[in-house]
Image (cartoon, rainbow, N blue to C red; front, side, top):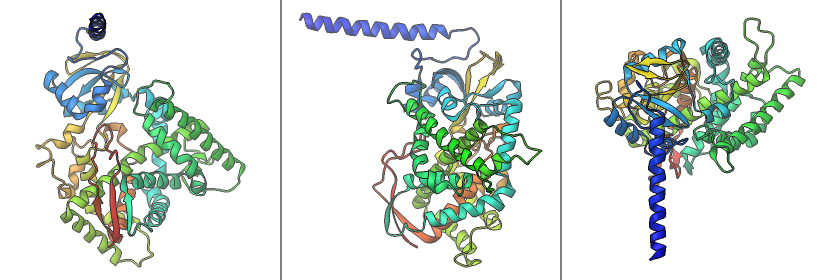
Length: 465
């Protein structure tokens, strides 16, 4: 009986402490003029609910507080905006004090010089250097031939195999980007680089708690290892008189008087940014395109028709060229519809550099604003029958210029690698659908938040077409 009373009192004390902590944390942020909402626990906030419940958490909060509410996620007090017009205003007005506000874990792991972390004149210089690497001319003359050669070889031995398409598209996205960055050395550094890079990616979306065994700690250690690998690669190139026609070669060039000269640290952070930004969108969109094509035979047949017509104009050994890419109108529609329906990117983060008023509320200096764009993708007024996989809706290319089209970001922060990513996925789809047919094996579960992934993999059995 005494033991039972001790346990009962202990439980009551724990409940009292928990309730007191929750009330204390709410009181801390009960400043006049703030949007409505809840802040959760001290330090952790509502991060667990946000990551576990995802879209349902957002819908529940919107039902209670409207489309503009406060929370505390990923270590920061945050205002969530689910209003399309307000989202566009926030994305278009960086100069008014709405700068990138990515989580501390992402800033620590991707580096202080990465393009997502800087703003103002520094952002302009870094973006200019990045855009020069992935301009239409560079894609046409330098990058597309490398992409074609790599993907042709990468897909060459899939016949009569059981493939984890999630794992393979991750490898493809990383290795393809690495070949574009450091063509000559890509094979020799890939084995050491790739596992470190995968750990880095996991660490960017975690609480910045530097304890052994946490994703943050593993990601930060992976960054250190990557800095060593890339630093050694840069030093080897400095010691060599050989010129390289790849991204790293361009970033290291000293004979371009019109271009901002990057330090070694800036070059390394640019490389990490290129790898990171392209990796998740290309790999996940490729995986989900395979999934949706399998589930929608009519779409697959239309896609195959487009690519058979391209191959009919070529010899078997001829590569995909720029004009071929431009003719892939239905392929582009499939890629954009996949990005919309799967919602590869749920939103973007901004940070206030000064106290400001938004939507009739006061937002303190230093708070994050989560521009949550996921729900726009399923708005029936914008996309009739929004849960249907219907690439034909994008055959009207003017839809890509609509104000609500935020699949690739908006404002001065629109994804600079959009066209390069589309080129990579288009080339993958070209060789995949013209060489192979496939069936899903196992019916694995898909998770859509915070990342689109198949926790147990997505397995397909591949055979010759």
